[in-house]
Amino acid sequence: MSESNARKRLLGPDDARDAPGAELEAPERIVDPQDTLEDEVYGASLRPRTFEDYVGQETVVENLRISIDAARRRGEPLEHVLFYGPPGLGKTTLAGLIARALGANFRPTSGPTLEKPKDLVGILTALEEGDVFFVDEIHRLGRVVEEFLYPAMEDFQIDFIVDRGAYAKTLKLPLKRFTLVGATTRAGMLTAPLRERFGIVHHLDYYAPEELERILRRSAGVLGVPIDDEGATTIARRSRGTPRIANRLLRRVRDFAEVRAAGHITAEVAAEALQREGVDELGLDRLDRAFLRTIVEQYRGGPVGIGAIAATLTEDAETLEDVVEPYLLKQGFVTRTASGRRATPEAYRHLGVAVRASVQERLL
Image 1 (cartoon, rainbow, N blue to C red):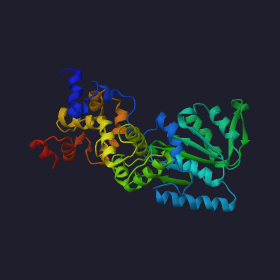
Image 2 (image 1 turned 180 degrees about the vertical axis):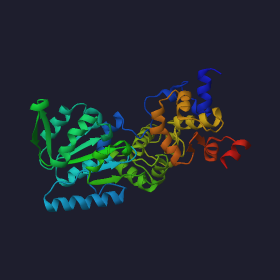
Image 3 (image 1 turned 45 degrees about the vertical axis):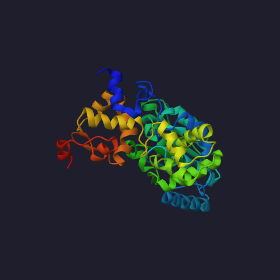
């Protein structure tokens, strides 16, 4: 079997309408929860500007508002805050809302950009009293940079070592009191010393479809596109519990509606638009289905290692683990075992593939 035919078989007949291999080689996926250039350009306008406009994560928001109110009454900066959870759930948005609620400046950066201690020192020394310093993907800080951050978080000072050996001495540079807000999708990769310096820690979880519908109706109002309740429901159910994906799908459906449906989004318009994008009724795209077909058809339902799946799909194993697999696990299509990944009967049913008797016995 040729490579192009093998790809078509993995993608399925309905997914192979475009150029062979294009689906798997596309640099961005519409259901990718990671931030994209489009989200950076258009996402800011869709972010809520107050806690009252923020939808979902009720317990997190309520506790944050209490902490902020207490800090303002005492006239003190808010304790350092850590948000962790899957990408696209609103960690950056919450950090911005904290700054707005405190009436403070918002200074965002990301872990990978802080390559050297001088990069961090330059930012810290420029912070004003009460500023909110936001570090996205904080688990990707380098070890040396992270160690410079410890005294800054704990004692609001930076320690410099001058000279070496017997002549070495430490100089302390005082900083203005600030609030560090860290965000990470991999809390387990944070070192214990860094994690322990956060006084407030919150986990963000996936959104319910009802919450996503509220977000979509608000976003549609901001974008100026008419959408009915059934249209919002259709998009919400395919958004993988993630507001960032919901807003991205809404923009794609808006484009289709403006060209083919007089600009109004209904359930039928949304379903047709998302079908054209390769997103099915459960939010799986072509790569998700190719992942499942690889296990089901090429590896007889598993078990199979993630490295073998990645090699078959010519994808990066880490990308599959971080971006594709979590949602399939959440939906019950895949299970992880000591010997590898297995496809569940639900995966067979979703792909429309009959479960062989031997596989059925093994799964049961």
